[in-house]
Image 1 (tube, rainbow, N blue to C red):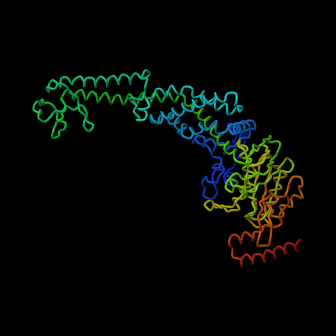
Image 2: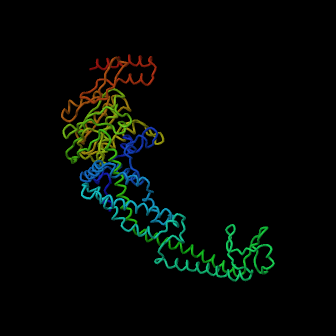
Length: 567
Protein backbone atom coordinates (compact mmCIF):
# COMPACT_ATOMS: atom_id res chain seq x y z
CA UNK A 1 0.00 0.00 0.00
CA UNK A 2 1.93 3.05 -1.28
CA UNK A 3 -0.33 5.40 0.65
CA UNK A 4 1.34 4.25 3.86
CA UNK A 5 4.78 5.36 2.68
CA UNK A 6 5.75 8.59 4.43
CA UNK A 7 8.70 10.64 3.10
CA UNK A 8 11.56 10.78 5.61
CA UNK A 9 11.53 14.56 5.33
CA UNK A 10 8.06 14.73 6.84
CA UNK A 11 8.25 12.14 9.59
CA UNK A 12 9.01 14.95 12.04
CA UNK A 13 11.88 13.08 13.68
CA UNK A 14 14.68 14.88 11.84
CA UNK A 15 15.41 18.27 10.37
CA UNK A 16 15.40 18.26 6.57
CA UNK A 17 18.61 19.49 4.95
CA UNK A 18 18.12 19.47 1.15
CA UNK A 19 21.11 19.10 -1.16
CA UNK A 20 21.49 22.86 -1.78
CA UNK A 21 21.66 23.48 1.98
CA UNK A 22 24.29 20.75 2.48
CA UNK A 23 26.34 22.17 -0.38
CA UNK A 24 26.04 25.94 0.21
CA UNK A 25 26.50 25.70 3.97
CA UNK A 26 29.50 23.39 3.45
CA UNK A 27 28.18 20.84 5.89
CA UNK A 28 30.31 17.92 4.67
CA UNK A 29 32.43 19.34 1.85
CA UNK A 30 33.89 22.76 1.13
CA UNK A 31 32.93 24.56 -2.06
CA UNK A 32 36.54 25.15 -3.18
CA UNK A 33 37.98 21.69 -3.83
CA UNK A 34 35.20 19.44 -2.55
CA UNK A 35 37.26 18.09 0.34
CA UNK A 36 36.12 17.90 3.97
CA UNK A 37 38.64 20.56 5.02
CA UNK A 38 36.85 23.68 6.25
CA UNK A 39 33.46 21.96 6.48
CA UNK A 40 31.24 21.91 9.55
CA UNK A 41 31.70 18.14 9.81
CA UNK A 42 35.47 18.42 9.89
CA UNK A 43 35.18 21.10 12.58
CA UNK A 44 32.95 18.88 14.73
CA UNK A 45 34.88 15.69 14.03
CA UNK A 46 36.72 15.25 17.31
CA UNK A 47 35.82 11.54 17.48
CA UNK A 48 38.59 9.00 18.02
CA UNK A 49 36.98 5.91 16.44
CA UNK A 50 35.91 5.20 12.87
CA UNK A 51 32.43 4.10 13.97
CA UNK A 52 32.09 7.21 16.15
CA UNK A 53 32.91 9.37 13.15
CA UNK A 54 30.30 7.58 11.05
CA UNK A 55 27.65 8.12 13.71
CA UNK A 56 28.52 11.81 14.05
CA UNK A 57 28.20 12.17 10.28
CA UNK A 58 24.76 10.55 10.50
CA UNK A 59 23.73 12.91 13.30
CA UNK A 60 24.86 15.91 11.28
CA UNK A 61 22.98 14.77 8.19
CA UNK A 62 19.75 14.35 10.16
CA UNK A 63 19.58 16.79 13.09
CA UNK A 64 16.86 15.93 15.57
CA UNK A 65 13.49 17.61 16.02
CA UNK A 66 12.59 16.05 19.38
CA UNK A 67 13.35 18.37 22.29
CA UNK A 68 13.48 15.55 24.83
CA UNK A 69 16.13 13.59 22.93
CA UNK A 70 18.10 16.75 22.21
CA UNK A 71 18.14 17.77 25.86
CA UNK A 72 19.36 14.28 26.80
CA UNK A 73 22.26 14.76 24.39
CA UNK A 74 22.94 18.21 25.80
CA UNK A 75 22.92 16.82 29.35
CA UNK A 76 25.38 14.09 28.38
CA UNK A 77 27.71 16.56 26.67
CA UNK A 78 27.51 18.96 29.61
CA UNK A 79 28.26 16.19 32.12
CA UNK A 80 31.27 14.97 30.13
CA UNK A 81 32.43 18.58 30.00
CA UNK A 82 31.95 18.96 33.77
CA UNK A 83 33.69 15.71 34.74
CA UNK A 84 36.61 16.64 32.52
CA UNK A 85 39.45 14.71 30.84
CA UNK A 86 40.71 13.26 34.12
CA UNK A 87 37.59 11.10 34.30
CA UNK A 88 37.39 9.94 30.71
CA UNK A 89 40.96 10.48 29.50
CA UNK A 90 42.14 6.86 29.77
CA UNK A 91 38.92 5.56 28.23
CA UNK A 92 39.20 7.96 25.31
CA UNK A 93 42.87 7.06 24.83
CA UNK A 94 42.03 3.35 24.68
CA UNK A 95 39.18 3.99 22.25
CA UNK A 96 41.57 5.80 19.93
CA UNK A 97 43.66 2.61 19.67
CA UNK A 98 40.73 0.28 19.06
CA UNK A 99 40.32 -1.43 15.69
CA UNK A 100 37.12 -0.84 13.75
CA UNK A 101 35.06 -3.33 15.77
CA UNK A 102 31.91 -2.39 13.88
CA UNK A 103 33.47 -3.59 10.63
CA UNK A 104 35.00 -6.57 12.46
CA UNK A 105 31.58 -7.73 13.67
CA UNK A 106 30.21 -7.46 10.14
CA UNK A 107 33.08 -9.62 8.86
CA UNK A 108 32.35 -12.17 11.61
CA UNK A 109 28.68 -12.30 10.64
CA UNK A 110 29.59 -13.00 7.00
CA UNK A 111 32.44 -15.37 7.99
CA UNK A 112 34.94 -13.39 5.92
CA UNK A 113 37.51 -12.81 8.63
CA UNK A 114 40.86 -14.07 9.86
CA UNK A 115 41.36 -15.48 13.37
CA UNK A 116 43.75 -12.64 14.29
CA UNK A 117 41.10 -10.02 13.42
CA UNK A 118 38.46 -11.85 15.46
CA UNK A 119 40.81 -12.13 18.41
CA UNK A 120 41.64 -8.41 18.47
CA UNK A 121 37.98 -7.47 17.94
CA UNK A 122 36.92 -9.58 20.91
CA UNK A 123 39.89 -8.41 22.97
CA UNK A 124 38.97 -4.77 22.33
CA UNK A 125 35.33 -5.36 23.26
CA UNK A 126 36.35 -7.25 26.39
CA UNK A 127 38.79 -4.54 27.46
CA UNK A 128 36.34 -1.69 26.89
CA UNK A 129 33.66 -3.59 28.80
CA UNK A 130 35.96 -4.01 31.81
CA UNK A 131 37.02 -0.35 31.71
CA UNK A 132 33.40 0.81 31.64
CA UNK A 133 32.46 -1.48 34.55
CA UNK A 134 35.19 0.07 36.66
CA UNK A 135 34.30 3.59 35.51
CA UNK A 136 30.60 3.16 36.19
CA UNK A 137 31.41 1.91 39.69
CA UNK A 138 33.64 4.94 40.30
CA UNK A 139 30.89 7.27 39.08
CA UNK A 140 28.07 5.54 40.92
CA UNK A 141 25.82 8.18 42.40
CA UNK A 142 27.64 10.92 40.50
CA UNK A 143 26.21 10.58 37.00
CA UNK A 144 22.99 12.43 36.32
CA UNK A 145 22.65 12.16 32.56
CA UNK A 146 20.42 9.25 31.57
CA UNK A 147 22.01 9.11 28.11
CA UNK A 148 25.50 8.85 29.59
CA UNK A 149 24.34 6.21 32.07
CA UNK A 150 22.87 4.20 29.22
CA UNK A 151 26.26 4.09 27.53
CA UNK A 152 28.37 3.36 30.60
CA UNK A 153 26.02 0.68 31.97
CA UNK A 154 24.55 -0.65 28.76
CA UNK A 155 27.78 -1.52 26.96
CA UNK A 156 29.09 -3.98 29.60
CA UNK A 157 25.66 -5.60 29.84
CA UNK A 158 25.42 -6.09 26.07
CA UNK A 159 28.97 -7.52 26.03
CA UNK A 160 28.39 -9.78 29.03
CA UNK A 161 29.47 -12.99 27.28
CA UNK A 162 32.27 -11.66 25.08
CA UNK A 163 34.91 -13.14 27.40
CA UNK A 164 33.44 -16.62 26.90
CA UNK A 165 34.35 -16.43 23.22
CA UNK A 166 37.66 -14.69 23.81
CA UNK A 167 38.78 -17.39 26.26
CA UNK A 168 38.11 -20.07 23.67
CA UNK A 169 40.83 -18.64 21.44
CA UNK A 170 44.57 -19.23 21.77
CA UNK A 171 46.32 -15.88 21.38
CA UNK A 172 49.46 -17.33 19.78
CA UNK A 173 47.49 -19.43 17.28
CA UNK A 174 45.16 -16.51 16.50
CA UNK A 175 48.09 -14.25 15.69
CA UNK A 176 49.41 -16.98 13.33
CA UNK A 177 45.92 -17.58 11.87
CA UNK A 178 46.36 -21.26 12.78
CA UNK A 179 42.86 -22.75 12.93
CA UNK A 180 44.09 -26.22 13.89
CA UNK A 181 45.33 -25.09 17.31
CA UNK A 182 43.14 -22.02 17.70
CA UNK A 183 40.41 -23.36 19.99
CA UNK A 184 41.29 -24.05 23.60
CA UNK A 185 38.17 -26.11 24.38
CA UNK A 186 37.29 -28.79 21.81
CA UNK A 187 34.30 -30.25 23.63
CA UNK A 188 31.96 -28.62 21.12
CA UNK A 189 34.10 -29.66 18.16
CA UNK A 190 34.47 -33.48 18.34
CA UNK A 191 35.60 -33.81 14.73
CA UNK A 192 38.59 -31.58 15.38
CA UNK A 193 39.39 -33.47 18.59
CA UNK A 194 39.36 -36.83 16.81
CA UNK A 195 41.56 -35.59 14.00
CA UNK A 196 44.10 -34.12 16.42
CA UNK A 197 44.24 -37.53 18.10
CA UNK A 198 44.80 -39.13 14.69
CA UNK A 199 47.73 -36.80 14.02
CA UNK A 200 49.17 -37.50 17.46
CA UNK A 201 48.86 -41.25 16.84
CA UNK A 202 50.65 -41.00 13.50
CA UNK A 203 53.46 -38.99 15.07
CA UNK A 204 53.75 -41.50 17.92
CA UNK A 205 54.08 -44.38 15.46
CA UNK A 206 56.90 -42.57 13.67
CA UNK A 207 58.66 -41.92 16.95
CA UNK A 208 58.21 -45.54 18.02
CA UNK A 209 59.86 -46.75 14.82
CA UNK A 210 63.12 -45.09 15.87
CA UNK A 211 64.06 -48.12 17.99
CA UNK A 212 63.99 -50.42 14.95
CA UNK A 213 66.07 -47.99 12.90
CA UNK A 214 68.65 -47.62 15.67
CA UNK A 215 68.97 -51.40 15.98
CA UNK A 216 69.33 -51.79 12.23
CA UNK A 217 72.09 -49.17 12.03
CA UNK A 218 73.81 -50.38 15.19
CA UNK A 219 73.25 -47.10 17.02
CA UNK A 220 72.57 -46.61 20.73
CA UNK A 221 70.21 -43.70 20.07
CA UNK A 222 68.62 -42.24 16.98
CA UNK A 223 66.43 -39.29 16.01
CA UNK A 224 65.02 -38.05 12.74
CA UNK A 225 66.45 -35.02 10.97
CA UNK A 226 64.63 -32.19 9.23
CA UNK A 227 66.46 -30.42 6.41
CA UNK A 228 65.03 -27.59 4.28
CA UNK A 229 61.50 -28.38 5.42
CA UNK A 230 61.80 -32.09 4.63
CA UNK A 231 61.22 -34.02 7.87
CA UNK A 232 61.60 -37.57 9.17
CA UNK A 233 64.92 -38.16 7.43
CA UNK A 234 67.32 -40.94 8.49
CA UNK A 235 70.80 -39.43 8.46
CA UNK A 236 73.73 -41.86 7.99
CA UNK A 237 77.47 -40.97 7.82
CA UNK A 238 78.88 -41.67 4.40
CA UNK A 239 81.37 -44.15 5.90
CA UNK A 240 78.42 -46.28 7.08
CA UNK A 241 76.30 -46.10 3.93
CA UNK A 242 77.17 -49.74 3.12
CA UNK A 243 75.03 -50.86 6.08
CA UNK A 244 71.90 -49.16 4.68
CA UNK A 245 69.34 -51.63 3.23
CA UNK A 246 68.95 -51.46 -0.52
CA UNK A 247 65.21 -50.69 -0.37
CA UNK A 248 65.77 -47.41 1.49
CA UNK A 249 65.10 -44.29 -0.60
CA UNK A 250 67.95 -41.78 -0.74
CA UNK A 251 66.54 -38.26 -0.22
CA UNK A 252 69.69 -36.06 -0.16
CA UNK A 253 73.40 -36.11 0.60
CA UNK A 254 76.41 -33.98 1.53
CA UNK A 255 80.12 -34.71 1.63
CA UNK A 256 79.73 -36.06 5.17
CA UNK A 257 76.30 -37.67 5.37
CA UNK A 258 73.48 -39.18 3.30
CA UNK A 259 69.81 -39.03 4.18
CA UNK A 260 67.27 -41.79 3.59
CA UNK A 261 63.72 -42.88 4.21
CA UNK A 262 62.86 -46.47 4.82
CA UNK A 263 59.70 -48.00 3.29
CA UNK A 264 58.09 -48.13 6.73
CA UNK A 265 58.94 -44.48 7.49
CA UNK A 266 57.55 -43.48 4.09
CA UNK A 267 54.30 -45.29 4.86
CA UNK A 268 54.00 -43.79 8.34
CA UNK A 269 54.91 -40.33 7.06
CA UNK A 270 52.29 -40.58 4.32
CA UNK A 271 49.70 -41.45 6.97
CA UNK A 272 50.81 -38.43 9.01
CA UNK A 273 50.49 -36.08 6.00
CA UNK A 274 46.97 -37.31 5.30
CA UNK A 275 46.05 -36.88 8.96
CA UNK A 276 47.41 -33.33 8.97
CA UNK A 277 45.49 -32.42 5.82
CA UNK A 278 42.30 -33.74 7.37
CA UNK A 279 43.17 -31.80 10.52
CA UNK A 280 43.36 -28.57 8.50
CA UNK A 281 39.93 -29.29 7.02
CA UNK A 282 38.49 -30.04 10.45
CA UNK A 283 40.12 -26.87 11.78
CA UNK A 284 38.42 -24.76 9.10
CA UNK A 285 35.15 -26.53 9.78
CA UNK A 286 35.43 -25.86 13.51
CA UNK A 287 36.42 -22.25 12.82
CA UNK A 288 33.31 -21.67 10.72
CA UNK A 289 31.20 -23.30 13.42
CA UNK A 290 32.78 -20.98 15.99
CA UNK A 291 32.00 -17.96 13.78
CA UNK A 292 28.41 -19.13 13.37
CA UNK A 293 28.01 -19.39 17.12
CA UNK A 294 29.68 -16.00 17.65
CA UNK A 295 27.48 -14.49 14.92
CA UNK A 296 24.34 -15.20 16.95
CA UNK A 297 25.47 -12.33 19.21
CA UNK A 298 25.86 -9.94 16.28
CA UNK A 299 22.85 -7.68 16.95
CA UNK A 300 23.60 -7.39 20.66
CA UNK A 301 27.30 -6.68 20.10
CA UNK A 302 26.48 -4.11 17.42
CA UNK A 303 24.13 -2.34 19.84
CA UNK A 304 27.06 -2.13 22.24
CA UNK A 305 29.24 -0.66 19.48
CA UNK A 306 26.47 1.83 18.67
CA UNK A 307 26.47 2.94 22.31
CA UNK A 308 30.25 3.17 22.22
CA UNK A 309 30.02 5.31 19.07
CA UNK A 310 27.45 7.47 20.87
CA UNK A 311 29.86 7.88 23.77
CA UNK A 312 32.56 8.88 21.30
CA UNK A 313 30.22 11.52 19.85
CA UNK A 314 29.51 12.89 23.34
CA UNK A 315 33.26 13.20 23.92
CA UNK A 316 33.65 15.00 20.57
CA UNK A 317 30.81 17.45 21.24
CA UNK A 318 32.14 18.08 24.74
CA UNK A 319 35.51 19.00 23.22
CA UNK A 320 33.73 21.43 20.91
CA UNK A 321 31.80 22.86 23.84
CA UNK A 322 35.00 23.36 25.86
CA UNK A 323 36.17 26.10 23.48
CA UNK A 324 35.90 29.69 24.71
CA UNK A 325 32.66 31.45 23.83
CA UNK A 326 30.41 28.41 23.49
CA UNK A 327 27.07 28.07 25.26
CA UNK A 328 24.33 25.52 25.70
CA UNK A 329 21.36 26.66 23.59
CA UNK A 330 17.92 26.80 25.13
CA UNK A 331 15.43 24.90 22.98
CA UNK A 332 11.76 25.79 22.52
CA UNK A 333 8.89 23.96 20.81
CA UNK A 334 8.55 24.69 17.10
CA UNK A 335 5.30 26.57 17.69
CA UNK A 336 7.21 29.31 19.55
CA UNK A 337 9.16 30.60 16.55
CA UNK A 338 12.38 32.02 17.96
CA UNK A 339 15.95 32.46 16.79
CA UNK A 340 17.61 34.64 19.41
CA UNK A 341 21.39 34.56 19.38
CA UNK A 342 23.62 36.95 21.28
CA UNK A 343 27.13 37.48 19.91
CA UNK A 344 26.91 34.52 17.56
CA UNK A 345 29.88 33.49 15.43
CA UNK A 346 30.48 31.30 12.40
CA UNK A 347 31.91 28.08 13.95
CA UNK A 348 34.42 27.33 11.20
CA UNK A 349 35.49 30.89 10.38
CA UNK A 350 35.74 31.68 14.08
CA UNK A 351 38.27 28.88 14.46
CA UNK A 352 40.23 29.99 11.39
CA UNK A 353 40.31 33.71 12.21
CA UNK A 354 40.58 33.44 15.98
CA UNK A 355 40.04 36.62 17.98
CA UNK A 356 39.50 38.76 14.87
CA UNK A 357 36.06 37.37 14.10
CA UNK A 358 33.24 39.88 14.68
CA UNK A 359 30.23 38.41 16.47
CA UNK A 360 26.64 39.41 15.70
CA UNK A 361 23.21 39.12 17.25
CA UNK A 362 20.14 37.56 15.66
CA UNK A 363 16.58 38.23 16.75
CA UNK A 364 13.78 36.47 14.90
CA UNK A 365 10.52 35.92 16.72
CA UNK A 366 6.95 34.90 16.11
CA UNK A 367 6.06 38.41 14.86
CA UNK A 368 9.20 39.67 13.09
CA UNK A 369 10.14 36.55 11.15
CA UNK A 370 11.96 38.10 8.22
CA UNK A 371 15.30 39.92 8.20
CA UNK A 372 16.47 41.71 5.06
CA UNK A 373 20.23 42.22 4.99
CA UNK A 374 22.01 44.73 2.77
CA UNK A 375 25.46 46.24 2.65
CA UNK A 376 28.62 46.48 0.56
CA UNK A 377 30.06 43.53 -1.28
CA UNK A 378 32.52 41.56 0.87
CA UNK A 379 30.94 43.12 3.96
CA UNK A 380 30.13 39.74 5.57
CA UNK A 381 26.47 39.27 4.62
CA UNK A 382 26.82 35.72 3.31
CA UNK A 383 29.01 34.71 6.25
CA UNK A 384 26.39 36.01 8.64
CA UNK A 385 23.45 34.10 7.16
CA UNK A 386 25.56 30.93 6.98
CA UNK A 387 26.47 31.51 10.62
CA UNK A 388 22.83 31.60 11.70
CA UNK A 389 21.99 28.48 9.71
CA UNK A 390 24.96 26.56 11.11
CA UNK A 391 24.11 27.57 14.68
CA UNK A 392 20.57 26.18 14.43
CA UNK A 393 21.86 22.99 12.83
CA UNK A 394 24.47 22.54 15.57
CA UNK A 395 21.81 23.13 18.22
CA UNK A 396 19.58 20.40 16.80
CA UNK A 397 22.57 18.10 16.61
CA UNK A 398 22.79 18.37 20.41
CA UNK A 399 25.93 20.50 20.32
CA UNK A 400 26.80 23.67 22.15
CA UNK A 401 26.95 26.69 19.83
CA UNK A 402 29.40 29.57 19.28
CA UNK A 403 27.51 32.36 21.02
CA UNK A 404 27.20 34.13 24.35
CA UNK A 405 23.62 32.86 24.60
CA UNK A 406 21.08 31.26 22.28
CA UNK A 407 17.36 30.53 22.46
CA UNK A 408 16.09 28.55 19.49
CA UNK A 409 12.80 26.98 18.53
CA UNK A 410 12.87 23.61 16.82
CA UNK A 411 13.02 23.84 13.03
CA UNK A 412 11.86 21.12 10.66
CA UNK A 413 14.22 22.16 7.86
CA UNK A 414 16.82 24.60 6.60
CA UNK A 415 16.43 25.74 2.99
CA UNK A 416 19.21 27.65 1.27
CA UNK A 417 19.51 29.44 -2.06
CA UNK A 418 22.84 31.09 -2.58
CA UNK A 419 25.78 31.03 -4.96
CA UNK A 420 25.88 30.88 -8.74
CA UNK A 421 26.71 27.97 -11.02
CA UNK A 422 25.55 26.41 -14.26
CA UNK A 423 25.34 22.86 -15.56
CA UNK A 424 26.21 22.77 -19.24
CA UNK A 425 25.95 18.99 -19.53
CA UNK A 426 22.30 19.18 -18.50
CA UNK A 427 21.76 22.37 -20.50
CA UNK A 428 20.93 24.40 -17.40
CA UNK A 429 21.96 28.03 -17.15
CA UNK A 430 22.95 29.77 -13.94
CA UNK A 431 19.59 31.50 -13.68
CA UNK A 432 17.63 28.31 -14.42
CA UNK A 433 19.40 26.50 -11.57
CA UNK A 434 18.72 29.50 -9.33
CA UNK A 435 15.01 29.39 -10.16
CA UNK A 436 14.78 25.61 -9.78
CA UNK A 437 16.32 25.76 -6.33
CA UNK A 438 14.00 28.61 -5.42
CA UNK A 439 11.02 26.60 -6.62
CA UNK A 440 12.05 23.59 -4.53
CA UNK A 441 12.60 25.88 -1.55
CA UNK A 442 9.17 27.52 -1.82
CA UNK A 443 7.38 24.20 -2.18
CA UNK A 444 9.30 22.43 0.56
CA UNK A 445 9.54 24.96 3.38
CA UNK A 446 6.94 25.20 6.14
CA UNK A 447 6.07 27.69 8.84
CA UNK A 448 8.74 26.06 11.00
CA UNK A 449 11.58 26.06 8.45
CA UNK A 450 14.50 28.47 8.22
CA UNK A 451 14.82 29.95 4.74
CA UNK A 452 18.09 31.57 3.64
CA UNK A 453 18.16 33.50 0.34
CA UNK A 454 21.29 35.24 -0.90
CA UNK A 455 20.91 37.80 -3.70
CA UNK A 456 17.92 36.15 -5.35
CA UNK A 457 17.36 37.36 -8.91
CA UNK A 458 20.89 38.52 -9.67
CA UNK A 459 21.21 36.06 -12.55
CA UNK A 460 18.93 38.04 -14.87
CA UNK A 461 18.07 41.62 -15.81
CA UNK A 462 17.78 44.06 -12.92
CA UNK A 463 14.04 44.68 -13.34
CA UNK A 464 13.21 40.98 -13.65
CA UNK A 465 15.52 40.11 -10.77
CA UNK A 466 13.98 42.78 -8.55
CA UNK A 467 10.47 41.62 -9.40
CA UNK A 468 11.31 37.99 -8.62
CA UNK A 469 12.99 38.93 -5.34
CA UNK A 470 10.05 41.09 -4.20
CA UNK A 471 7.42 38.55 -5.22
CA UNK A 472 9.31 35.69 -3.55
CA UNK A 473 9.75 37.57 -0.30
CA UNK A 474 6.08 38.57 -0.28
CA UNK A 475 5.12 34.92 -0.74
CA UNK A 476 7.35 33.84 2.15
CA UNK A 477 5.94 36.54 4.43
CA UNK A 478 2.28 36.16 3.52
CA UNK A 479 1.91 32.47 2.73
CA UNK A 480 4.73 30.51 4.36
CA UNK A 481 5.30 32.73 7.43
CA UNK A 482 8.66 31.04 7.99
CA UNK A 483 11.80 32.54 9.56
CA UNK A 484 13.70 34.11 6.67
CA UNK A 485 17.12 35.68 6.10
CA UNK A 486 17.09 37.58 2.81
CA UNK A 487 20.30 39.13 1.46
CA UNK A 488 19.86 41.59 -1.41
CA UNK A 489 21.32 44.58 -3.20
CA UNK A 490 17.91 45.66 -4.53
CA UNK A 491 16.66 48.76 -2.71
CA UNK A 492 13.12 47.96 -3.85
CA UNK A 493 13.21 44.84 -1.68
CA UNK A 494 14.16 46.81 1.41
CA UNK A 495 11.03 48.95 0.96
CA UNK A 496 8.89 45.95 1.88
CA UNK A 497 9.53 46.85 5.50
CA UNK A 498 7.09 49.72 5.00
CA UNK A 499 4.44 47.28 3.77
CA UNK A 500 5.07 44.80 6.60
CA UNK A 501 6.47 46.88 9.48
CA UNK A 502 5.85 44.19 12.09
CA UNK A 503 6.98 41.21 10.04
CA UNK A 504 10.06 42.50 8.19
CA UNK A 505 13.11 44.22 9.60
CA UNK A 506 15.96 45.79 7.63
CA UNK A 507 19.57 45.36 8.72
CA UNK A 508 22.88 46.05 7.04
CA UNK A 509 26.50 45.19 7.67
CA UNK A 510 28.24 48.29 8.97
CA UNK A 511 31.06 50.01 7.10
CA UNK A 512 32.91 53.31 6.96
CA UNK A 513 33.54 55.30 3.79
CA UNK A 514 36.54 57.62 3.59
CA UNK A 515 36.29 58.17 -0.16
CA UNK A 516 34.57 56.33 -2.97
CA UNK A 517 37.76 54.31 -3.34
CA UNK A 518 38.16 53.49 0.35
CA UNK A 519 35.57 51.44 2.23
CA UNK A 520 36.33 49.92 5.62
CA UNK A 521 34.27 46.84 6.51
CA UNK A 522 33.15 46.64 10.14
CA UNK A 523 31.25 43.33 9.77
CA UNK A 524 28.76 44.40 12.42
CA UNK A 525 25.05 43.94 11.73
CA UNK A 526 23.12 47.13 12.50
CA UNK A 527 19.49 48.20 11.94
CA UNK A 528 18.46 49.88 8.70
CA UNK A 529 19.09 49.38 5.00
CA UNK A 530 22.31 50.31 3.20
CA UNK A 531 21.86 52.76 0.34
CA UNK A 532 24.79 51.56 -1.78
CA UNK A 533 26.72 48.32 -2.37
CA UNK A 534 30.12 49.85 -3.29
CA UNK A 535 30.77 47.21 -5.91
CA UNK A 536 33.36 49.43 -7.59
CA UNK A 537 35.44 49.24 -4.43
CA UNK A 538 35.51 45.46 -4.77
CA UNK A 539 36.54 45.86 -8.41
CA UNK A 540 39.58 47.86 -7.28
CA UNK A 541 40.42 45.26 -4.63
CA UNK A 542 40.23 42.56 -7.29
CA UNK A 543 42.80 44.37 -9.43
CA UNK A 544 40.54 45.72 -12.18
CA UNK A 545 42.51 48.52 -13.97
CA UNK A 546 41.80 51.93 -12.36
CA UNK A 547 40.85 53.39 -15.74
CA UNK A 548 38.10 50.81 -16.14
CA UNK A 549 36.82 51.47 -12.61
CA UNK A 550 36.89 55.25 -13.19
CA UNK A 551 34.83 54.90 -16.38
CA UNK A 552 32.42 52.57 -14.56
CA UNK A 553 32.03 55.13 -11.79
CA UNK A 554 31.03 57.84 -14.26
CA UNK A 555 28.52 55.51 -15.89
CA UNK A 556 27.12 54.47 -12.51
CA UNK A 557 26.54 58.11 -11.59
CA UNK A 558 24.74 58.72 -14.88
CA UNK A 559 22.50 55.68 -14.39
CA UNK A 560 21.73 56.74 -10.83
CA UNK A 561 20.82 60.28 -11.98
CA UNK A 562 18.61 58.85 -14.72
CA UNK A 563 16.78 56.69 -12.23
CA UNK A 564 16.21 59.63 -9.87
CA UNK A 565 14.92 61.81 -12.72
CA UNK A 566 12.37 59.14 -13.67
CA UNK A 567 11.05 59.16 -10.12
